[in-house]
Amino acid sequence: MKRLAVLLCVGALACAEESPSVTEALPNTLTNEEVAQGWTLLFDGVTTAGWRSYNGEGFPRQGWAVRDRTLTVIQGDESDVAVGGDLVTLGVYGSFELKFDFNVPAGGNSGILYLVQEREGEEIWWNAPEYQVLDDAAYLAMDDMDMRTHLTGENYDLHAATARVVRPPGEWNQGRILVDGTHVEHWLNGEKMVEYELRSPDWEARVAGSKFAEYPNYGRAEAGPLGIQDHGHSVAYRNIKIRRIGETP
Picture 1 (cartoon, rainbow, N blue to C red):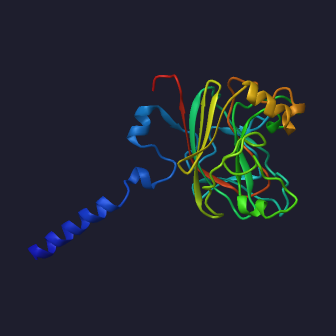
Picture 2 (picture 1 turned 135 degrees about the vertical axis):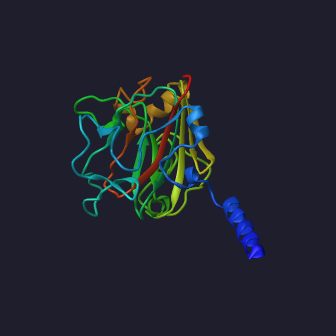
Picture 3 (picture 1 turned 90 degrees about the horizontal axis):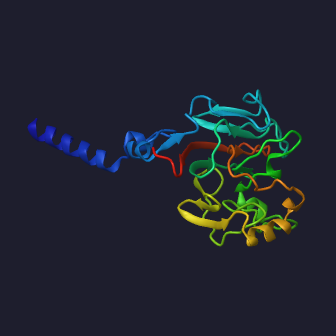
C-alpha cells in the first residue's frame, strides 16, 4: 500500500509539472505577473462589458455574442454583409501593448483597429489603422485579388510582412499590437510582422498611394478606442488584454 501511495504521488507530481497552471489554462484570465505589469482584461469571457457599437452607445443587439468564452461575430448569411457592425472599447488608449487570440473560419475576414476616431457618417476604417485578421489561403487562391499588405498581421493596405506564420482556419492564433507614441509594431504567433512610424514621411507616402488617400482623418489620432471589425464572418476572439505604456501599474 505504501509503495502504491508513493507511485501515485510521483505520478501526480509529474502530471502537475507537465500541465499548465490554472491561470495559463483558462482563457480570459491574467497571471499574477501580468497583473503586476499593469495588464487588464478587455473581455472577461462571460459578458460584453467594456464594449459598444462604433458610433453608438450600447452593445449591438444582433451580430455579436459571447460563445464558449469567446467574443464572436455571428454570421448572418454567406455574404460579407456585417450584421452587428464594428465594436469599440469604452476605454481610450494612446500608447499601449495589446494581446489577443483569434480563430478564423474558412474564408473568414476581420481585423483589429486602433487609434479609432468616431465621427457621424464615417466608417471605422476611414480613420483607424488595422491589424488584418484573415483566412490567408482562401484569399490568396483568388486570382483576381492582390493580397499584398492585406494578409494576417499586416498593416492593412500599407505595410506587408515577409513572414507567413498564420495558422489554418479553426486554430487559434496569437496577435500583438504595440503602439508607443508614433512607433507601431504588429506581431503574430511570436513573429514580428510589420514595424512602422505613424505620420513619418514614408508612412505619408504610403497613405497617399493607398485607398486611404481620400480620407483626411486616417491615422491622425494620438489616442482613441480599439475596434474589432465585423466583416460578416464568424471570427472569434478571446484573451484580449491591454497594458498602457508610460503609466505606473
